[in-house]
Image 1 (tube, rainbow, N blue to C red):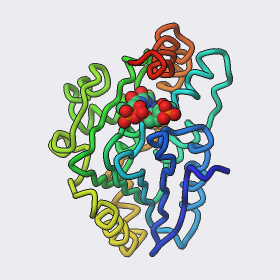
Image 2 (cartoon, protein in one colour; image 1 turned 60 degrees about the vertical axis):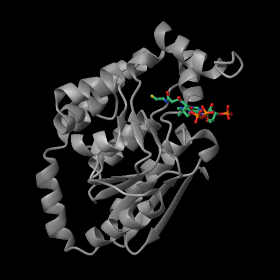
Image 3 (tube, rainbow, N blue to C red; image 1 turned 120 degrees about the vertical axis):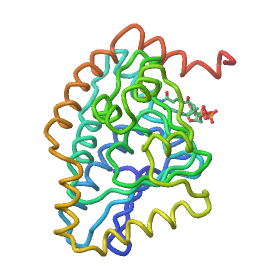
Length: 252
Ligand code: COA
């Protein structure tokens, strides 16, 4: 149990809210576990017709908790929570809407490749510094990002580490609309409620057709995961995590 993930159901929409603003919504193992459970339970609950994922104002998520990464890099156990979450998200049977404001780093960006509609504010910046951290893409992003963004923009995002602001993300097809921060949640929830009110069987078949077979997405998540786990223990990654942890002490 963690109070860093808040879950509620409103008007047939299950709202999953990342609630760790003091750490810019960096995601811990307990948070992945809570989100995986919420998605699985919401998918089985007839009262839920749509999922909605939100972060905090100015911080959708700073990505995986780097202290958790450092623990693995220095000999600790990794845990399966992140994969449980990713497989639950990728395999989710009901539509997923996200509302993103501000920081969206790493998995804070790649989550949205699995969402059916993403709304973002003008202040949002998507960034995936995997390679700079000695890591590789995750969440099936090496498969999905080239499809969504095209190969060049996907490479710039995932390999070069180039940021995408909201306008660029909209032009690239990563998000559906840009809305002011003051109306982000209202707009995203209104879309989620509209989806929740549709005939569910017709919506589900339509969504399945649009998303295509999931097997290759699951397979890619697992393939990336093999590399990711190995990379977490690499000298490159250990050095990057340690530098982040020490940056304030070192005045960086
Ligand atoms: N893991 C763990 N803690 C994190 C974190 C992360 N991914 N991102 C931010 N935090 C913590 C900071 O350590 C800081 O904690 P402290 O106040 O106890 O020192 C707090 O959140 C606020 O972050 P701070 O860096 O002061 O905010 P900022 O607005 O100056 O910068 C970021 C925000 C997101 C640009 C910066 O924190 C960052 O680069 N984070 C790492 C992002 C990352 O590489 N994620 C992994 C991707 S795979």
